[in-house]
Length: 200
Image (cartoon, rainbow, N blue to C red; front, side, top):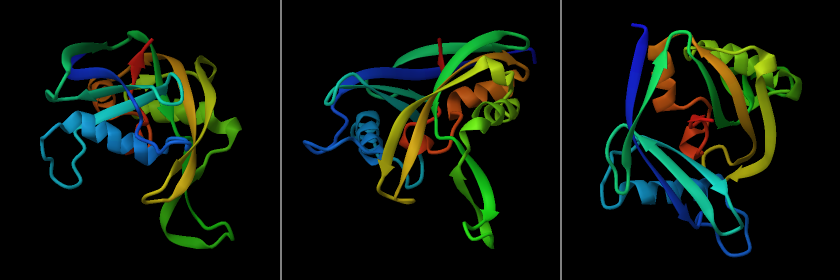
């Protein structure tokens, strides 16, 4: 199949990100606020997250929340995005740069892999490699990474994560995989607002 068209439901809302007065928003604040605006009164089974989201700060207390899902939700409008073999696209998303390792900081082998921050000099080449698994090609020199700062995650890993704004000129090689990336995102921590693709 040379073209794949994805039908989604999207909404953009100006809102308070849910943090306490005098404190910076955490990834957990974004997560809770996105769920509240997406679900309304609808209940979803434990572990299901049928949407992607992203927050962009306009000022301390006003953020732009963008939501995308494969099903209708309150305030959403329907849109579509086509992916065609050989088409060039300029896309952007938020990314937490990391690599998986089976070694502890002391060099001992771990029972399972864990993610550690990726060295700055590897960001563009890592993205180039990973994009190939998602139906795109992009040379490292066509990928631009802008660090945005570090955000706290209180639940789960209870860590700080560096968040990077990525913009890249991509060529579609596999429309089906590209469509799945549009629906599923391109980063770890998608539960916390990473990986939602936008066309520039």
